[in-house]
Length: 115
Length: 111
Image (cartoon, rainbow over all chains, first blue to last red; front, side, top):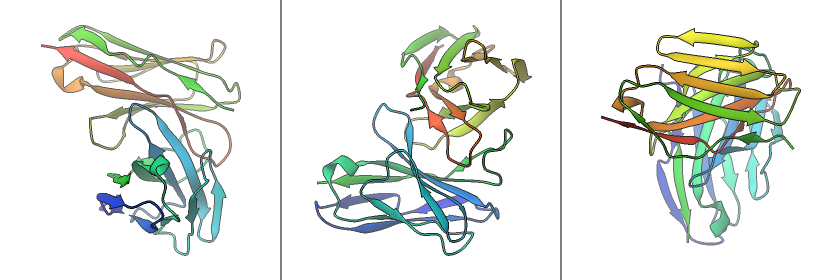
């Protein structure tokens, strides 16, 4: 199992450009999450999904969009990139959601810089 | 709004000593609690989870939970230089939403 994979690893965008961060998991997990981590800070939830076709906003969703057409994939779309979106983006997945024994597994991250 | 507070450190501990990391949380409805380790430039890696009051031990690691005080801690015994990392406390409520993370404590184990 590859676990959770993310592409690209690094990306530099110009202000106003758009891009899609890819996330794929091969553990047949129902729940998937997108977090961002700013320097010296903890992770903040952007969006999450409880299954194919179902997504919901997290703490910091503005400027992002997601879709979940399959169990495996959960892409994050940035429209009109802004410098405030410079961050490291982590995708995570878990088998359960909300259960006390739920464990989230993280991908390696995408480091995004908006100039 | 849910909040998780940690001392950012750095916390410096001699090799072989016990490192004690602390975390408080604001949401009394929180049900499960996690400690993640994050090396610089890497993704978070789960160290331990705990959901009942008291202590939970796994090798050199012990997690402690006190729901009445809304307090979670992580003890690392016989600290090794490889334990040097940022430790993130994360809390989860009863819903399907994600984890709420603290800012992390930067731990340095001095050889």
